[in-house]
Image (tube, rainbow, N blue to C red; front, top):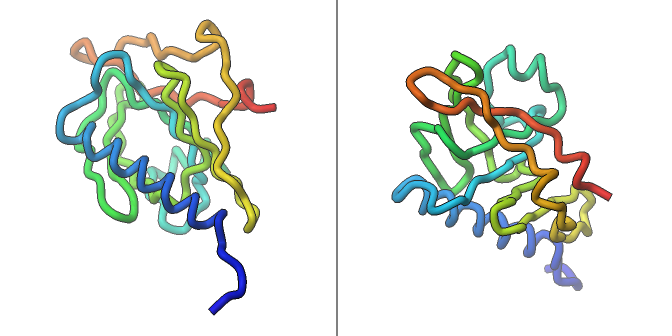
Length: 157
């Protein structure tokens, strides 16, 4: 038994549980209102499963947008699987919660950042003006919107 409470890891586990609960609701009922998510994850995490061409294009980290079109969202205790459309190419991704670096819902200016240091804290991402948020606007087949990979660097200090 340790002589210290590991608040950083406890906080990370709680916030990943929050993400799991949100995604479970989305898988069941869909996205309510204007809610949408930017999720940045570590593409080099050993349990991440993405197409080779995506890991080649985004070695290190990748941000996906869950907004207009997604399919096959399956949420588990360890992570989630989702199919997103990249251009005309639907791809299935598996993202473990431990690989997530940021989770942002710009519709309500909510965000979480997971730091990699052992004593890391989960912090709220600084507010960014809504006109700086990236909105995917590329038409995909059958009126679907395309998933877009974006960088959240503009929102970081």
